[in-house]
Length: 466
Ligand SMILES: NC(=O)c1ccc[n+]([C@@H]2O[C@H](COP(=O)([O-])OP(=O)(O)OC[C@H]3O[C@@H](n4cnc5c(N)ncnc54)[C@H](O)[C@@H]3O)[C@@H](O)[C@H]2O)c1
Image 1 (cartoon, protein in one colour):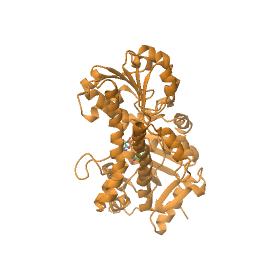
Image 2: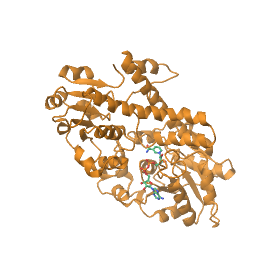
Image 3: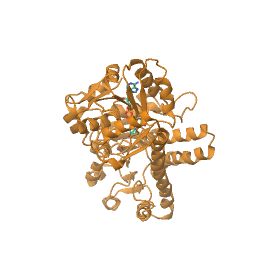
Image 4: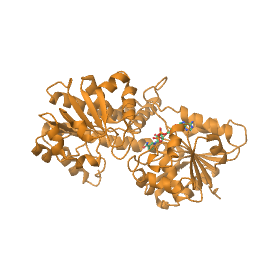
């Protein structure tokens, strides 16, 4: 008989831990869910009396937190207490690309995972099911097992892999109606029981046929593979976008034409300034690194090309702005609309906007940024992280505004870098009137009605159209 789970702990209250645990709490009122994190500021924000101030913006999330927080959902910095009380522990900490040592710039940095495992091993006094929720290199469970089994305190640990497939911006609906839930388990009797215990949690709202069970290694590798395939589609259509621009083909028309082929499918065929986000790049780099460590250089080269194409697309867009503005943007004001890596999230990790802005600042442009959800401090922190110039210089050359009309005032050009819906509702005639002429508009998301913009008087450049 599988253990019936009554108390869940989740280590890591980020973009994955926060929303997934909120959904579990909402759908399983009989389970106590403790979400813990070492980041005190983040936990304080999750506990803010006004649910609109929770640290992660996702449509529908604040309502769900409002319904469950203080009932069976709790946010705290007391990691030890939550570990002790739990039957099941989700590890949902960050796994960024390594910035030092062996595998620098490619391998996943597993230090946060390892710290969690050591802490669980040190604190646990009763049997626990450990669930890898973070995205991890294939065979990480082996390392976890080795740390957990060397505690000598007689506690039994079962390790499951349950990667998260939610997309930021649609996290709540993705969690509510997942295409599938993947649960990888060890192929032992205890492993199977642990798998069943997690199936029982999800069965509270996910249809059984959508819950897939595999061995641990397939599950770990499937998450990296899913991101690699998705990112590959973006790079494929982006590669074609450049060809469209020189051949007078229209990438939207090409995407529609191929997307109606049921073998190809219509999703993820939108050309853009390049993919961003915390996952695609780091997970592909990780896949490349894993392939290299197994001596599979051709496999590594194949996947690395997806990243090379993406870097090219971001640079190409920035170069196009400079070239179109008569080969110089020095001292020219450029308005950037959107800083988050996609709409409906305040996450800016690896956002194309950061790299486009950095390129333009190197060309001595003066930039004004408007984003509906990203704070000025986040924007400066993203730029400072690149280390291209001092914080002081970044603040001098780039201004963040909360009114889009101010962003475009006396600007030589406006660049759309995130596909926020509200940009389509702007009064573009008024925007045009307050810009310098000729007024250039660069649409990095193929978001706006370009014929209308041209009729207003804009000089329009868009990805994927000559
Ligand atoms: N963001 C996404 O869209 C997404 C989707 C699917 C999977 N993932 C994966 O999920 C994992 C988490 O991603 P995220 O975006 O939520 O990251 P995040 O950086 O938003 O959150 C991770 C949290 O873990 C906390 N943490 C780190 N070490 C800790 C420790 N020892 N004890 C307690 N807390 C600790 C950090 O303080 C941070 O708040 C990553 O492996 C990522 O690849 C992310």
